[in-house]
Amino acid sequence: MSSKAYVSLLLIGTELTNGTIQDTHGRYIASRLTELGFTVTKILLASDDLSTTDDLRNLAACSDIVIVSGGLGPTSDDITREMLAALSGGSLDFKQDVWDDIAARFDVRKGQSNKRQAFVPEHFSTIQNTKGTAPGLKGTVGNTLLYALPGPPHEMRRMFDRAVVPDLVQSFHVETEEFLEATCFLLSESLLEDACGKFPRSGVSWGTRAGEGMIHLYLRGGMQQEREAFLGFLQEYFGKERLKNGSVDLPAYTVALFKDLEYTLSSAESCTGGLFSKLVTDIPGSSEVFPGGVVSYSAGTKAVYLHLDRSEIETHGVVSGETAAAMAQSVRVLSGSDIGISFTGIAGPGGGSTEIPVGTVWIGIAGHDGEIRTFPFRFKGSRDRIRRKAVAAGFLLLEIWVTEKKRLDSYRKWQYI
Image 1 (tube, helix red, strand yellow):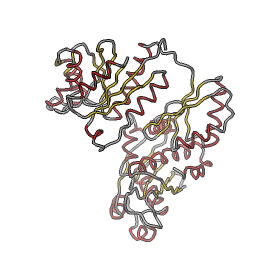
Image 2 (spheres, rainbow, N blue to C red; image 1 turned 135 degrees about the horizontal axis):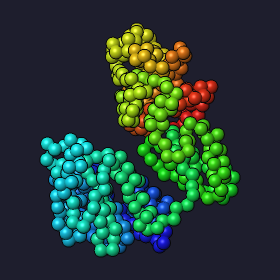
Image 3 (tube, rainbow, N blue to C red; image 1 turned 45 degrees about the vertical axis):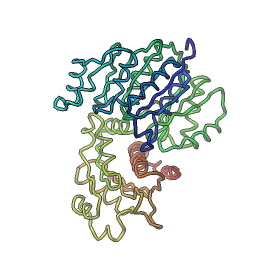
């Protein structure tokens, strides 16, 4: 970078300031900027109120760059556009081309409130939002470069990574060093840190960035073969399925693998509530791989929709290896797929017992060759985290099943999470 640039973050949302939700944007943006050589000096949480304009003005006065997140939605309390117009001394103008783009991609012409998102402050340009209706904004206030990004995490992170970071790299002449990136699944940062410390340094340094359901690991310095040897050590240490070279989306990776092998896959879900099938069908072209799935929450629906024997369920229990095996085999047969996968467990926060505590999940996999296996897990965390961990484990087990089945017992190393 030609000179050190100072950045401030303004994260807008009354739900942040009243404690309804925790801020995750600040950590995400700050860690990415620090990796690039920027200095983040302030992170400010503010409510949905026009008085926040003063906060924004103060940040702009002491920063080279200000990044705002939130307040770009279609409702009356989404006031970021108005703040930017007031701060820059310009008008707030309706842009027909912006509205046409939003309406064409999301079919919201009847939702007149969405038209608010087509108003753009004078002297600002828009950043297309590929995941939602609210475009981002870019402009300058005095000598300060200012970006406004949407609040929803999946929208903000995609826009930040794909639009803001490349723009900053170009604008501030960031000199990017060679590094190796790996995506880590079902790993904690502390255990990853401990393992990294066991590798002979050889001039290679490491850093991590937490993502949604994954950790991004960056290996810098040394020669390329040294960074590759470092990653190879970690893959041997934890299992190569859990550390993948590059930036990897696990559902997309699995769908691509099944396409390459010309395998089809179906799912029977209980405790995961359809999350597995949702993540699979988010991938364009997944219909080539995934004929469908069944969400059967109660014992009764398992009997009706999966044709399971109710007496067998009552004998072994809904949360058991026997039920997981029967679910996987049944959905595979009913869908005509090559492989069936099942999830049954207790995601909490209630419903657990001494024998079957919250976090217990059984995953079953059934193959067209008649082989059926089940895998018990005991995950920690909130209801959402338990579900997401279970689904991630399912994707990893499927990868091993179709590539190197003899390594299936490696799942036993995943128990700490």
